[in-house]
Amino acid sequence: MKPTDLIDLGPLLQIALLAAALATLPLVWLAWRHRGKSTPQRLRALTLVTLFLTFDLVLFGAFTRLTDSGLGCPDWPGCYGNSSPFGAVHQITQAQTHLPDGPVTQSKAWIEMIHRYLATGVGALLTVLMVWSALAVRRLRHTDPAQARQIAPGWAALTFVWVCLQGAFGALTVTMKLYPAIVTGHLLGGIGLLALLAVQIQRHAPQPPALSTGLRRGVWAVLGLVLVQVALGGWVSTNYAVLACQDVPTCQGQWWPPMDFDAGFTLQRGLGVQADGSALPFAALTAIHVVHRLGALVVLTALALLIAALRRPAPRYAQGLLAIAVLQTLTGLSNVVLDWPLLAAVAHTGGAAVLVTLLAALLAHSRSPSRRSFHSPSAVPS
Image (cartoon, rainbow, N blue to C red; front, top):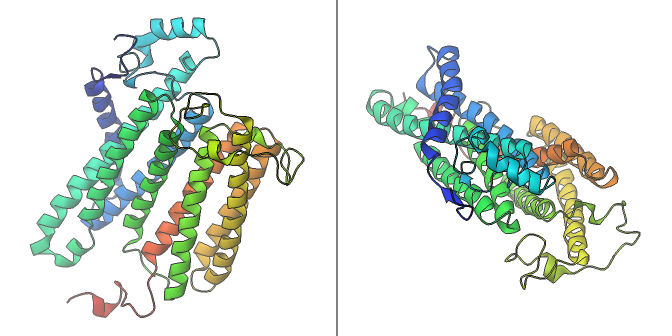
């Protein structure tokens, strides 16, 4: 591989075979654990396992970003044209000798490649989910229509397309050298994937809570606010603006420190530079950090109102949202006062992912009082 090559598809087949092997393990376990169950039950179990592994992938992606391992292998999809860092020891050693604290080291290369292996494994499971759903509906449509209606091939296909786009963003993250807008989009894509899987799991879950039309709109509004806040959090992380403010509740000892919003929120620029190539001023990092703080206050207020409204119709969701709100507050504060500890930073990303997943699951699971429940006897044909 030439030093200037950013994309080398040579190791793609080997990585795909490894992904297939990784996906086989949960598939074999599911086949044994759910033998004798109906096809919709087994598909739901596969979706649940894929959701769990996708959450792990999001966490490991945050770990990859926070350990500066995003360019541990500076090409895609392999590592210096190889399917693993084992085949790139010479190139990695050279890069590490030249820059011991640079983006390419032995440990960073492995972190980056493990992230790619996990991503391809999740992609393989989503491919199985899509194909299995389509074939199952085709088979059951005439023999067991009730079971066929419990399968959602359209959602499975949408999730497959989504993960393909997510893979493209992963490639761009490397080839565009951690371009902040691309990295933030990659984070949002991973969390969106969790939401899609949560919707599929909850579509036909038992005992859906009945929410008023106004309350459902409130959940949608809070979900929108949370997604904006996740994007702001990703923007903080990808621009390394966490430590721009190291005191709470003030920033740099002031309630409104000097800030450059134009430079901070220009999307078309590289990491650490402005659109014209000059260095990004510290005031821009301060602006990014402060806006995220203000967004946190808005989201926590909206969450508090929503939790209070959900206490009676959906108490379990209210309890879950309250726990995540507390976790996000504690980890967000610790990132500032404890100088961005790795565990707290990863947990903060995980909390955001769980928050979006819970809200998406609530919207998919709940129903309005006027809408006939899927589980009502009159809703199921005899």
